[in-house]
Figure 1 (spheres, one colour):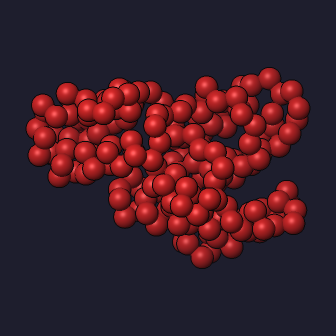
Figure 2: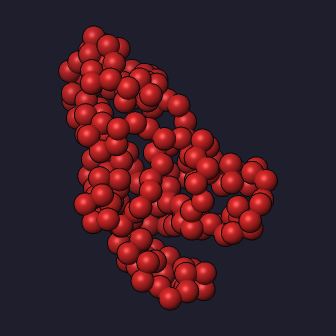
Length: 178
């Protein structure tokens, strides 16, 4: 979501889709259990879910969940699932390998109609404020570099290799077709 926020400021991503699942896991400090929150509920009203507010409010403040949910609601009015999106993209970026796998699986399960290529790239970003901020800058810089290529199809592998060396992160990349 931090990449969504930063991309709105620098206008580097014209369209963003939030997630592939219906729920967000919120870790419980100490017990090892997670609360499963329906993200449509989180985004659907001005009030945060009663489950969060009534269940150990300190825990959700301490782990940053309340701040993150409030920030997310200011960035986008509602979540969007990739599987429900019928838009055609040239580039899809994910921030978690599990989501990358789901996006690739979904694209490969669709009937190919136009054979237009779409590049799917994953940049693993840990789910915390600091990593999200650094990842947002990295993703937007990557998008700006891709926008300035003369031939994305032939230059993207080299560009990703340069970004891997520069950032110390490994990027996953595949091409799917619509």
